[in-house]
Image (tube, rainbow, N blue to C red; front, side, top):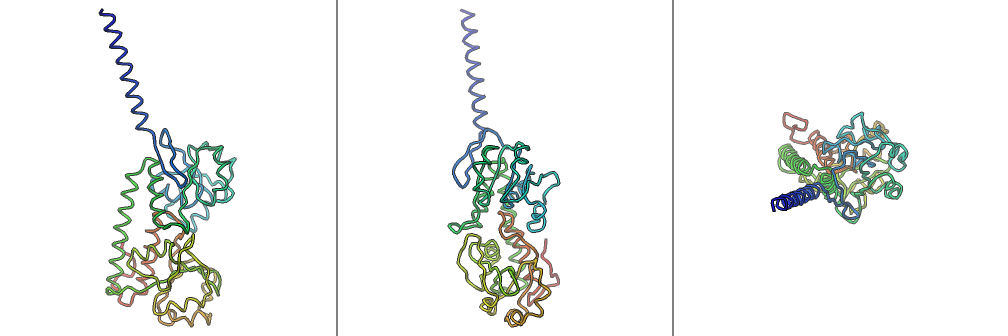
Length: 319
C-alpha cells in the first residue's frame, strides 16, 4: 500500500512538473503581427538582421543592436540617428544585400521592408522573415511607422520600452509646439517642405509624409495642399512653389547646388524668398520609422525658430 502511494505521488509530481514546464514554455512564446499576418517565435530573437533603414532605426531605438544591416555609411549620412555601433556588419545595399554574408551570421530573424520583399523566398532559406510595410498610399504612413515600432518591440521583448519611448516623443512634440507658439505669438504660419531635385524642380512633401505629420503635430497646416502618395512626396516644377503665397518654405539639406540659389532669378522671384519666409532644414530622414518623427520635428522647429518674426533670446530648440 505504501509503495502504491509513493508511486502515485511520484506520478503526480511528474505531471505537475510537465504542466509547469509547458506553462513556462507557453509564456515564452511570442506572437507578433507583421504586414502579412501573425508569426510565432518560441523565444525572443537575439540575433536580428535589419535589412532596411527604417527597420534598423526601429531596432536601434529599442536598445537592440542588429548583427547586420545594409548601406551603413549612407545611413550615417542620411538617417544619422540612432547611431549604428561599429559591431554591426554591413551586408551591402538595401536592394541587393549580400545573402552569403548574411547567412554566415546565422540570424535568428530577418526583418525587411518593401525594397526587400522580392527577396523573401531566398531570405526564408536563411532564417524566419518578418515584413513590415511602413510606406503605402493605402494607409497613414506615420501611424504605420508607430504601429510597426510596437510590433517590432513585441518581437524583441521590448514592448514596455517602446511605449515609454513613444510617450517621450509625444511630450517632446508638445514642448516643441509650445516653443513655436511663443516665438510666433500664437500665430503659426502655414508651411510647405521640399527637397531640391535640381535648380528647377523639387520633391514636395504632402499628405502621408512624415514631414507633414510632424508639422501637424506642431500645430502647423500645409501652405500647399497635396494628396497622399506611397512615400508622401511628388516631384514638382520649382515655379509651383509660388502657390505657397504668404506661407513659409522649408527645404531639406543637403543640396549640392545650394550656393547657386542666390543667383537664381526664379528662386528670388518667389514671395517667400522676398519676404524672408524661407529657411533650410538640417538633414532629417523623410522615410524613417517612428522615432524619425521626433527628429524631423526638432529639425523643422529649429528652422522655423531661425526665421520667427518675434524671436526670444534663444534661437535654438530647447532640449
